[in-house]
Amino acid sequence: MSEEAAEEIAPQPCGACRGSGVVISNLGDEPHEQPCPWCDGGGMTLRDHDAQAHWRADADSQQS
Image 1 (tube, rainbow, N blue to C red):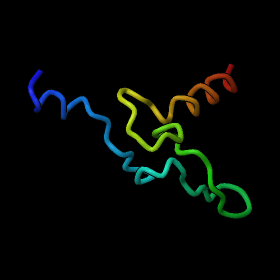
Image 2: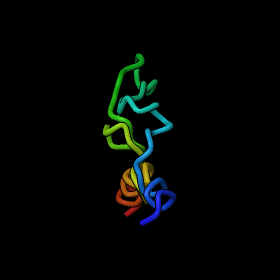
Image 3: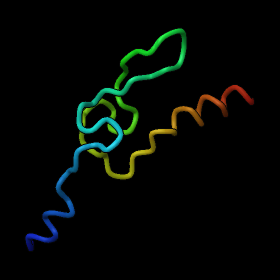
């Protein structure tokens, strides 16, 4: 495997939380920390991960 191919596969720090695994949510009464939905709190970008999927699933179940 070439170095270029290895670099493409190497995990990258999550851009949403800057690799911390935590984001600040302003929902509710006051700001609070929660696990980053884009990396599931791991701090690294997850390939083919949809951070919005659980919100769509919740909306679909409420419409039924």
